[in-house]
Image 1 (cartoon, rainbow, N blue to C red):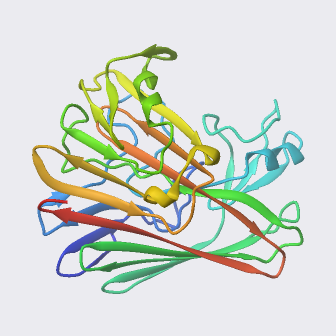
Image 2: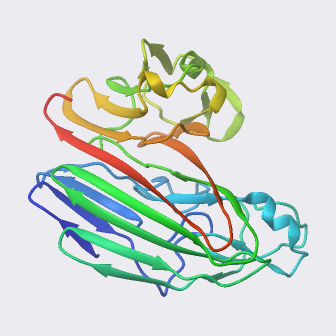
Length: 306
């Protein structure tokens, strides 16, 4: 597995340009493992239990969301899924659906690995007037991990989409349950987490008593065995002036991970199951033909009191 590292962090990537990573998540810069000080880990696979539906997500991986673009392709025709490739529209048509299987022609992907950074370049294939060259740099500095992504519009129509990082994380593999705390000072609807748990066998069966709000944090009251959670906060209920970040800690572990945001998310989505807590901050992207847009993300990994 390809890695970058310094004296504090070791970061391993899932990178194989010959094999499709996911029909949903972007192939560039997939961080499959982060190790701090040679002994603390933070990244998880999307699912650990065989037989569960999965999009094959892992660690710090992102998605470009432009689901309605698929409506422009007739059954059997192709449409672009940025970060992935050209997908063949299914017989029933409709917008892109992450739980359906599509035939995929992956976008060409290359990477250059150096000691403390890696640069990924995904080349476009013009389709429906859409073409984007994506350059993503992942670097480590001390106990921090940075990404810088440039979306270059080389097509003939504006790009109007969203990007987020799914963040499949835990603290050194500790199962999700009592002791975990997710601090979200910007979330104005944090109290709604009380009703966000569900039975993994049926998303519509909601459960209470698994989580609650405590100040600006979410705390777990029970282990999540057989259960997941899901909550969406729209931009109108987000208050970045209170703190544009999320931070995961545990009462009995001297570990933390924090993602600092340089933008107000268009949407904040929480998801998780027994082994991972996922905080997804969406950034809106609108790039005109011939132009480019660059944004950055930062994660801080800490051992000791956060």
